[in-house]
Length: 152
Image 1 (cartoon, rainbow, N blue to C red):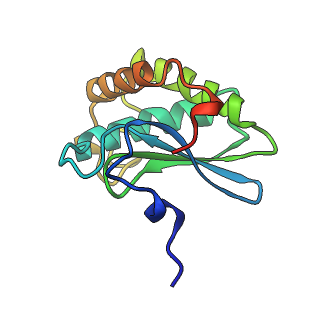
Image 2 (cartoon, helix red, strand yellow):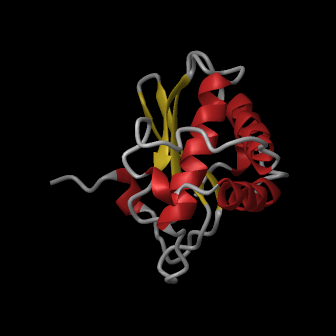
């Protein structure tokens, strides 16, 4: 079998940041790394789930909502994938969108989106403060990021 693109990245050298993972026709995938892989320093389930609810809600209600295809966690618990329609959003615009969205997540006020048994199958581990804290961390990490820095 062919080795998938993310398995071709040397995770021993990969550091937290924002990367271009792949392009599949008109779909671009960004790799949002929060933690250094292979260190045992992973996002907790509650952190991942909480970030996902806040950021997915902000993205799907934001200025580029028609370009967003998917935002969700990596199975390795080191970050998230953002998939978007590259016909509607260029790389530089997407980098700015990620920066704006995580800054908004760090300042998020109000109840946790989707925190009820009707809306989420595991709503009990959602924590808006965890989401704000981790969004603030990532917002500071990528503050100066540009499209030129998207390469692994």
